[in-house]
Image (tube, rainbow, N blue to C red; front, side, top):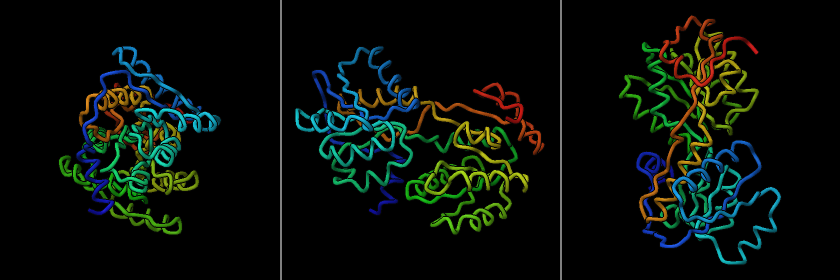
Length: 313
């Protein structure tokens, strides 16, 4: 089975692992950086551990400043589980804790790390909660916000996002939508690829959080060029909507921490451990953009928004 097929299968079905169960307290090593979003994930995790009275001992390590502590952790009794919050922590966990199960949180592009680890996905427990919106939610909101929508354009670069787009394409048919996509292999191809997609009469352009492809320069280019063509953009977070996208969904870190706690409970009972999307996402609407593009946002959608941008900032 090819890497792409494995990743796509994982996104559609979830990973399945050997039985593991714990009758006593579970010792978990939490790897993170001192970043506000990661701290929110940890808060959500702790809240659920306390609320459910789970027998879990957490040892929290800041991977940026506590390398010596980590060395000591590897020398003494190994933890039962590593919880990796953020992409850098997951990369570290894969490289340094090769025989220990890993549950990750708020990771943008874990698939390459999993496939490139010293043990395959079939040999070790490697799952968690992605820093991504379920493609189905994007499609649902896109159709609710613009009921006449038919074509969604997008670009991607990495194998993970190729799989993500494949999942989105398969679900789009349920909404009578078509995904107009193009893979970009280098920055030199970017402008041509973008123009190729929007020239196929797309109704909206979805900016994926594929940051191997997008940087500030290209994000600005897309927002401005799409606006000139009167094509609204969907952003992967609040910041993109503030910059000019029509709307966007932002994964909520505290809730992701709660999802991680639920995965740990499944792990402790030897149950299936699916790879999950962020379950709770905050909707942001930019009314400045909607007015400029003459797009009427349904009142019901406005009522669901966490934040509505009403003036240029």
